Figure (tube, rainbow, N blue to C red):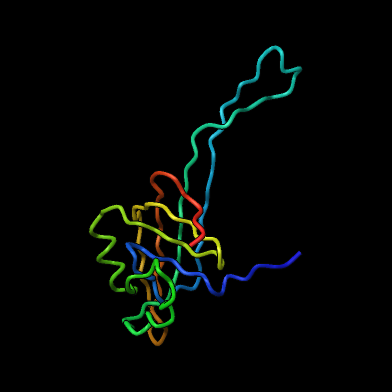
Length: 144
């Protein structure tokens, strides 16, 4: 079994790569409805209900706009966004297109709403941010 390392992936919001990203997670869940009946032989039974997903990410705040060369071969990338831009994006309260590159042939795409953006820093330390995203609609696998 080969261990997967997330070292070449990226996250885009509205076509722009989120630079200086340090981690990302996507959570997909499905509601279940209990359908236990007298015929269930004393064992609970369930059926799948609605599905939904969220995503979160953290990164280092940067005003660097020279990162796009790193993503020049990616057709899904139209620019970059950084920690400062993300605050303004969050305040706009509009749905954004999300693309998460998991590996060379696995992209997860969907539409998200930014539900929280936290920025923090301490004296003499780098500034960091965290981002929470609520998926709306399907999370879809694409290969390019």
